[in-house]
Image (cartoon, rainbow, N blue to C red; front, side):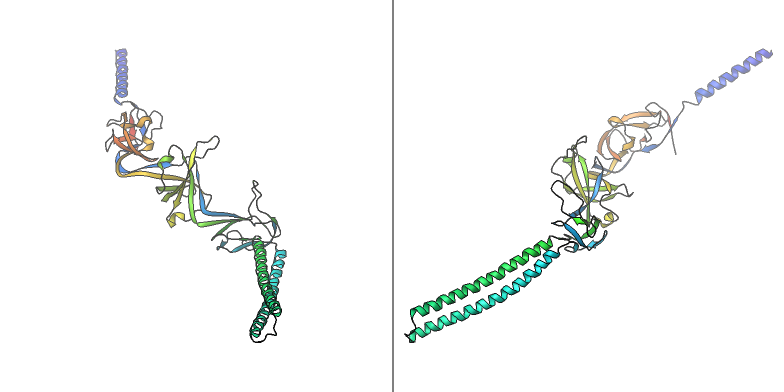
Length: 379
């Protein structure tokens, strides 16, 4: 009797265990979901490699002739005005020559005044003899000829002396130009970014084909742009004037006041790199230009077109061939394909295949998440 009772209890326990196992259903995978809604979708193109913030104007300044630095009028970080003197190379010899040319001009002016006064006197004498000849036959033709010749010679001496003044002035300009070649002046309003020269140090222009550090690096920080490479396949879609956003590693916020200002007229070919076209984006909003510095790494996103109220799904929820995992009412995952429209890194427009309110798996990278699996949605 006891054995029969024990066997009966055992069978009851086994039946209860099997019933619990089959009634609780399959094990469910925890996932995050996204319900299909409407919103803005933008079609855009991004750069393939990191871009760079650059100044619209940048000048690597060096004197036209070599020499020792005699004066350095600025330091790094100084703001300068156009034509402001920045650096002077030793030029005392040329300065002395300039003083000599000035003195020569004064001397030539004095000589010219003397020669021209003599010419005027000789011309007056010749005119008097001509008048006397009419009333006094004692005046011979020979005397008149000598007086006229003397007057012409004196006038020629006057012209020669005036020409000497012009020559002296030309020499003065030539020496002054040589002095200017020893000076570095700012070609535009800007900020001194870097100085690679010290007092007494010998500086020289870069010889052809041999790059050397310039004595002064000048930047115009009032105008900045981003230069970035676009894949050659996408480049034909980009046009000058298109809107663009700029993202910088140094700042969290996206800056969207940019416009495409230039597209390179050639494809850049570099070894072991995809062929690209350089695109420049200029920011117009003063707020977007704040805190920007040339040299920052930056990415660009050029807007091709947009829709303000399109049915959309997150790009991260989309599998190959525009397929998504739809969560059914009982938690079963179904693979479904949709027809896409506009697309970017964040959202893809749904043209057909999905309806508003469909629940999609957002965490598609989790283990076991595939069509036919049962899931539970995380709060």
